[in-house]
Amino acid sequence: MDPVDNNIKFALSIKDPNVVFYKYNYQVIKAKRAKVYIATVKFDQKHCPNCGFCELSHNGYYVSRVTYLAANASEPVYLELHKERVICRNCKASFMATSDVVDKYCCISRATRQKVFMSLQDD
Image 1 (cartoon, rainbow, N blue to C red):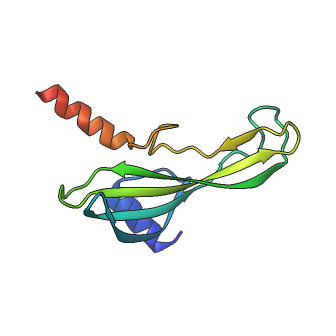
Image 2: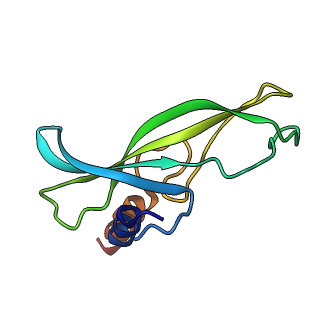
């Protein structure tokens, strides 16, 4: 594994092996300076979930920007996830890689949602 990947995963407390970080930078998002960590999410299955055929071909990436927990509230943290898309050569169904970091069709991380729910529960 890449040392950059290990350090970012340790700093963000991410244990998902399908997420591979390879870069980070600062960007201005919503008029604030924000940290952006860029990662790819690998498709971990070897067989088609629909028909069981083992011929899957790469079909590009879906890029999503996910809000993540920040230790410093004045500097938000975002994850730019490049989710791998594959297509089955047998049934022509397409699938996207998933991760434990974020729910499917969601742009807020599970850790952020859990932190919000915990703060609402206290009040």
